[in-house]
Image (cartoon, rainbow over all chains, first blue to last red; front, top):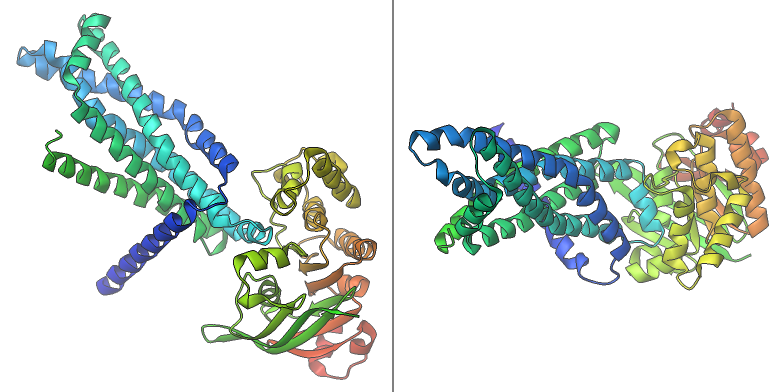
Length: 255
Length: 242
């Protein structure tokens, strides 16, 4: 039983690897589906912005409010902007953005492609002389890879603004002082690795969503299952990539 | 008349399930042939082999003299530009309007056309199925019969030489099914296309078919006109017409 489960997981990992290899072999060869890519950027980036921004703002606010009492206890209240900015920029904003996107984009792609598959729209596209892998998969994976870092940078900024408001609920920190401390604290070593890892988050979310949707079967039940497993696997991958990114930046002395 | 589709000794299996066994058949130019068979008899597999969506295990499958399973992507695209396919589920793109659905094959295969020419072809195709007013609607706003007509308009927009129909009247009420069958017949006459129709709807067969092929157990069990098959004493054939 356990052996069968392991075999199934390994087989799926192999299929995902093959699917990823096919993405690299097809995505960068003409014909490029630029219009569809821009359309996907709009859906993945612009349409996710309100959700990401609200979540980031709340996270910034909450982290600041939660951290304040501990810092006050140690007489280090003035360190609040520094501590909050490092936590938010290095870890919380990118990971929260990726998880929100795994839920929203991963499930959306999984369900959309899954329903296209079961209603023969993908076959129809192929019959119309369109490579569905290029048109549907390459565009979505690339859009997800390029949009999630932009969303994460916006989430950084919005969460820091939330942090500023949080710092002013029980205390009084001026706008200038807060941002001076934030920019004094943040180094390239904090910002660059955190942005770089979001490209991998975006790629993982896109490729898993597409893989699950494109290989959907068993009718409408399969569509639901595809959407669900796209969220589960891509969320898990976000944490695995985050762990690897932290280890790599640690090894490279970037932290 | 010239043969547009020639199939010889076609075989296809899925695991232990031998779906097509030594299937042979020829579709002539301008001919409307209906493949009649029970559900699960391999009708849809056959039609998908013809358009190159499924690869047969063995046998010869020529479309316009080109062996489909051996064609490169580019060659296959060229063959497909001359073959229309009406899917059983209509396969209209949910994320696009009716206009965009109809424009899609034109933008892929007829990139030389300008906006006005594309618009004229879209309006002509919609005119053929009597649904000009739906041009800016989305597929979700259309009824089953309307979706089928729009799908038919999209299939016809490239003016293909052959149209493959995968159960065109399935899921429609008898009146709408009849209307679609008459439309298929009219459009085949208007554009001089050859039609290859998969169906188990005898009303549709009666209206559309010049010739019927009985697909039983994956083989071409019998063929002939509606009248000839109707008079058959073979029990397997009789069950279809009773």
